[in-house]
Amino acid sequence: MAVETEAATRASAWPVADLATTAVPVAAPGDPAGQVVAGLVGRRFDEADVVAVLRPDGRLAGVARLEDLLAAPPDEPVEAVMDADPPTVTPGADQEVAAWRAVHHAEGVLAVVGADGRFAGLVPGHRMLGVLLREHDEDMARLGGFLARGRSARTASREPVLRRFWHRLPWLILGLAGAVAAAGIVGGFESELDANTLIAFFIPGVVYMADAVGTQTETIVIRGLSAGVPVGSMVRRELATGVLVGVVLAALFAAIAFPIWGDAEVVGATAIAIFAACATATLVAMALPALLARLGTDPAFGSGPLATVVQDLLSILIYFAVVSALVG
Image 1: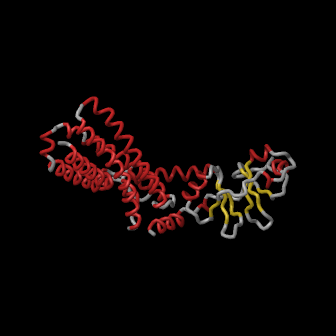
Image 2: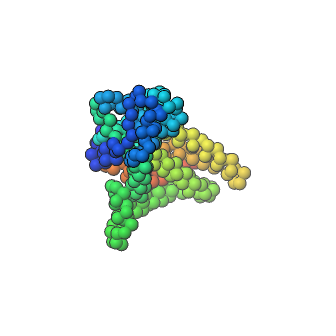
Image 3: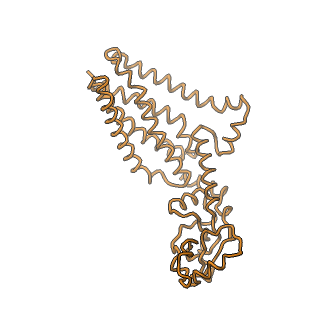
């Protein structure tokens, strides 16, 4: 799969082994907690929040948090307070995948082990935080339509006018084409607009709400893809969320709009359109990044102007289709 290929490429460029350190406290499973704590005094480590608990053959048995060791009776063995199943990664794993795994296991430090289970070091929490910050910058750059990595985004902030112009123009032309197409769609429903001008009032609202819902989903999907999470594992929950959001927004709109405008047909049709557009936006927001990833293209492009144009056109079509069917 393209996502797997991308993950492999990223792993070779950013292996978690580059973050790991072996300058950490270690202990055997049977060592008394008091002895381990006393052994930390007067020594300097790259990371001392946890103690790596190793078997005699060098394989990782678990990790023990310093606060647990301090709270344990001095003669209690380390294995009694250690986490025997901590999240671990191999040295070649991608850094963001590693950070994502540590965060989702509520761990401040991540253990790195080889294929044979032998201990290869710990990744300190501040280094994982640096990975998440770097990846956040990259994702925000991609959402803005920049290419590749965060370095491109930083370069773009200092590049000359002509280069800025050529980087932005293709996306703006795409948006312009979408605007022309949207005008054509609206023009096709001129008779409905002439019969009831209130219909025109709600077009921007329907389009905006769909875009907002889609943008939220796109951000989650792009973040998941960059961390190696397949789109398939997100589909059910994201679709359910989109439907639920659509129902709530439609109900709120009807409750607010009807007392103000008093046209039950138009308000009801618009509420239904908001629900349908929000549900559709969730589907589009997942489909485009997944499709681009399969084609071997950076999936973040699916969260930019392309998705916005597609969703805007769909929202307008949905709105006028519902209005034509329900408004007399």
